[in-house]
Length: 356
Image 1 (cartoon, rainbow, N blue to C red):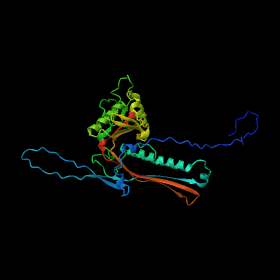
Image 2: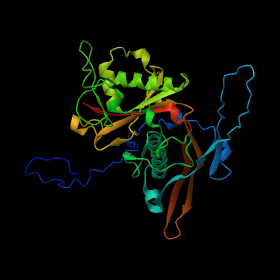
Image 3: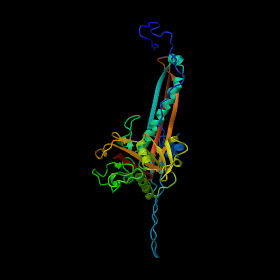
Image 4: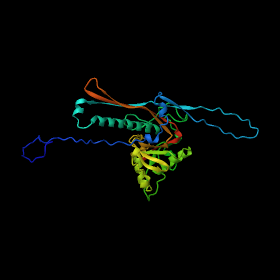
């Protein structure tokens, strides 16, 4: 670019002696926090990593207890060895080419930059797909919001009464989960959410507050006798903003010293470790589309559960480099092969919500 000059001054009009300098500092793109590794268990990783694509998991047998009276003929119960399977059936890859001449002329290690970005993309896609799966949704395309209801069962269901999304209907919070709401719209629509600022009165017949949703999630888990230790909650940025606006009791001590490591924002709120993630599923344009008429077509989904509820297992996670046989270039490619399984649907509760 030529240096600015006054009108009529023709000296060095093209700036031929002004060199272009490329900085060795590279602007890195922002990266989303991943949370799946912190809220799922990998207990079955060692069993499946080198032994095929399926692992059978045996369930604890249910035992019946009967009243005994003198003279009662005792009959022994046959034990049921019920099992279900976790299948390694998800794979993603990347591949890019680095030309020898471009690499030689580059003043930065562009191949390393690209490899790091590709590894992040694999991790981000994994996080998004697993979060959508445990919330009852599927991912329609790479790096896109999962907004289609999941109908593909991984292996076999952990609980036979679960739906095709492997979740229990009783563990899905929606509008009719809060009987005080009397506004129009079907009961299976999303929950109309609004914060209540300090000093304001709650609009209990038209909206629900973020803390009411969290408390109801806790209650539902309590009713399933889910352990209080090891509970987590994943919310999206919109829900988190409403929660922070509403609850003046959230002081600095509530926030994790780790900052946003693994998306962990609050170390303990209502018995939950609270993570914020942009990878949660949403329908339409998401929860930020306000209005009663949008509660069925535009909403966000949050999910809570226990560390034992979902298992993940990886079989291949590798990167390799080889020469392109048709040009002077290196090709870098990577693959991630994994599986995920809802082990305890009674330990997962979801809530779909819409900003009222």
